[in-house]
Length: 383
Image: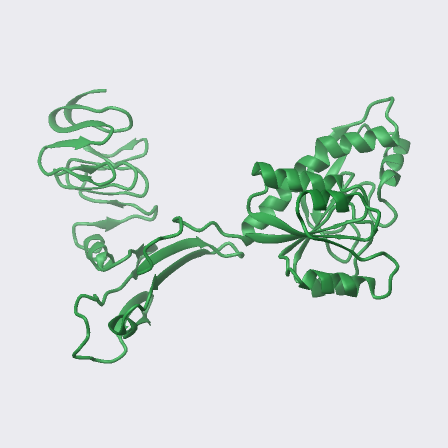
């Protein structure tokens, strides 16, 4: 979970929008851990208190104002800082030192009505004076240029003939700021906080964790818990593009039930990763002469193959991410078919000409009937 600190100076309506979004699940990849106000009388402090969020005051104009904020941030070490009605321009030195993504919401469609001097009602006064018909709000990253950072989200708001700066300000907040700020913060947090699959594993022996790094690269992690002397005698070692497990030293007392295997192997553009010695079995099968490798992460064999909507043979169907081999085969999500024996469903294997699946029946031969999302192979079929 990404830690978020929110800097405020006033009523805290944008802070409240973030709190609400956190409560209703829109903001789920990050958590507000701290609120810092530049004013002691800011109503945002009461909002933080009601939500049970720690809050501190560092009054504007005090000596070493930015330095004190940095000291305060250090207590929680947030990865994201949100300026929610924070009425102060931060220096380049502060931005460089804080080490977090800083997000700001501005009440206009940048690059219009923005920059130094454009804040609060001043923005809406300038908008109405200009005669434009549309305004809005912008969420952007913060750099050393006021309102000059990368734009993350924008939302337009219509202007009406009887608008006043106060009425327009309220409508921009309700229709734009409170909507796009939580969503933009969620997107930033999501990139910093990779989703981990599967859910936490209760059995601590060994397992696989998959996810994504903050830079967007795929992450595959394999682990073994060293719970015994024999288990601790095993180490990971890289062998080319593969990952193998070997003994640190030969030991006659080594537990033979602790298998030495390759949990991760590369085959072309495919990564084979299993929680055991199945990796070698799958590798051998996929690299055998009977199997050919395709670029889209699935394998097609023999002359007859149907992929997606394209029919290349008489009696064969595969879908993306599957392996098919033989004259008659059917693959559905995460399934593998080989020869005339069809395996479908999650953990159901059928040997022979007739296969039963979890959601219906598949018959391979003269007549076939399929229900739900299954395919029939044979000379005739009834859907």
